[in-house]
Amino acid sequence: MSDLLERLRERGWRVTAQRRVVAEVLDGDHVHLTADQVHTRAALRLPEISRATVYNTLGELVALGEVAEVSTDGRAKRYDPNAHRPHQHLVCSGCGAIRDVRPLGDPLDRLPADQRYGFTVSGAVVTYRGLCPSCV
Image (tube, rainbow, N blue to C red):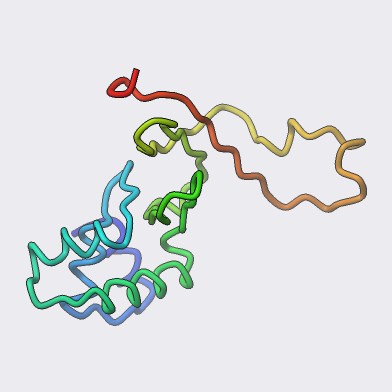
């Protein structure tokens, strides 16, 4: 069983055939698929699954906090099933490939107190950019 599917079952999420196949398609460490890519892969496993069902399921997974929406450079939103593990993203400026990275240290520690302007800072999103080996 996929890690995502197991977490969803533990939360009592009703697992239908359509929801199961979407969760299975999203499973993996470096999976950052668009909704259309999720639909295409899900339809290979369950041909009758509709695009609307995929979009609705992705919306539910995002609302539950089990999947994160990732937007980069005006490209289509991608869905990251590793929302439960702290990480940043490495994005290829050429093809848009996204990899999960876990740099050492907390990015909040890098923001000096005098640069917080009285904010109570609760989080940071860091995106590293470059060219992947295929685009170099």
